[in-house]
Length: 93
Image 1 (cartoon, rainbow, N blue to C red):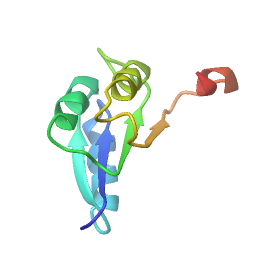
Image 2 (tube, one colour):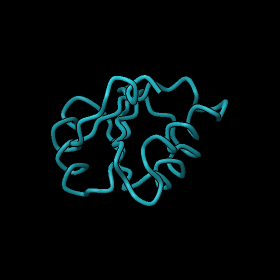
Image 3 (cartoon, one colour):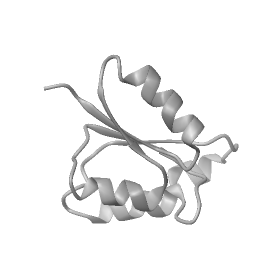
C-alpha cells in the first residue's frame, strides 16, 4: 500500500502545487482549510499531514490541537509550514 499524505492549506495554489509534486510517489489527499482537514480525518488516516499555519477561519495551530486531542488521529505526524517567519518559541508551542 502506498503511503498517503494529506496536504492542508486555504490556498488552492499551494495545495494543488504540492499535490502535483507528491502524487508521483504518494497517494495525496487535499484539504482546503482546517475544517476540511478535520472532516477528511473522520474517513481517512494519512501517513502524514502537511499543514499550513496561517489559514482562516481555523488556523493551523487550532487544527493541530484538534488533531492531537483526538485518539484516532493524535499519532499521525504533522509537518507544519508557513510563509510567515515564526519565532523559535512559537515553533515549540
